[in-house]
Image 1 (cartoon, rainbow, N blue to C red):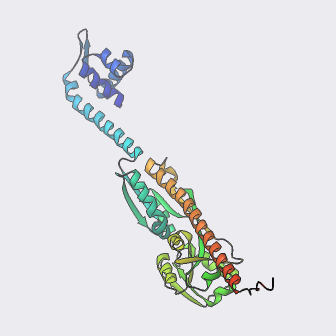
Image 2: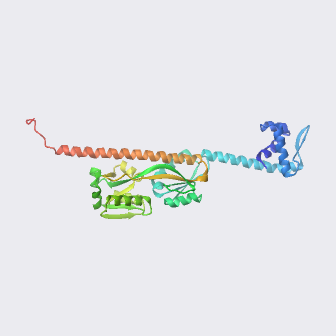
Image 3: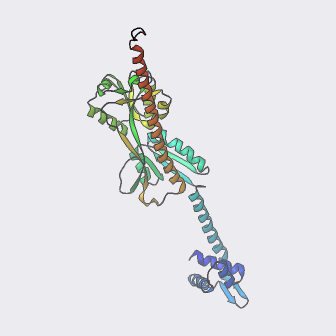
Length: 332
């Protein structure tokens, strides 16, 4: 039983004519007649009697007509719902995100997304990257935002790269030069976060390769707590750049360049099941916001860091100049 057959019956009954029903549905009369015949054959009963005075329903046709109308109406409602979902005027977007992403990159993106799609229902679940992958595989969320992971059933969409940067508070001795040698870290308290995260692994590997053994070590369970410790002057930390953008901008934290340290970046991706089909407009918009936002954040941070470095150099130059001996006018 096809919707086209049910629509043919409804129009023929409403207009009392097979030819007028064909015109209303923009099909030929033989095509419409074929649909009606196929429907009657499937049901095993004549639904419509055609004659010179037009077409009228049989008793079976009158009994069946409300069900045909209900089926067509339900299909129309379903089409309208899908159209609203495509436009982002309805529906829900379920997101899974790793902790650092849900804390720093996701909130501003969701703020902008909600402005664009005010009727969209949002839900967010946070967990480590492997946990988020599990949520995506189980269809518990529509998209997962994590570090790069591989799985045969998962499509991975690159969004942005988050860099690890060494930060100290503005009163720290490192803040004066903004460039240090690796050996200088050995006498400092290093604040690390979340042993289960890839950031912890990256930090540990970087220090080992540089032969750096911090004087003291403080380990916390999240980046925000580590950042607060640094702000209070309790140590230095390697943190995701996205976690400290605001503090870099207001100069409460300073980025310290370590001579010889490689730049360590972590790829942030969106995970979707390969059998999910094309993303609806709200999800596509979110991925664009995260991708564009990641690039803007990197550019803003690089600009702020560069400005801070120029200011530090200018301050050092000013100090050197003020200390230089002045020759008298008589000597010249």
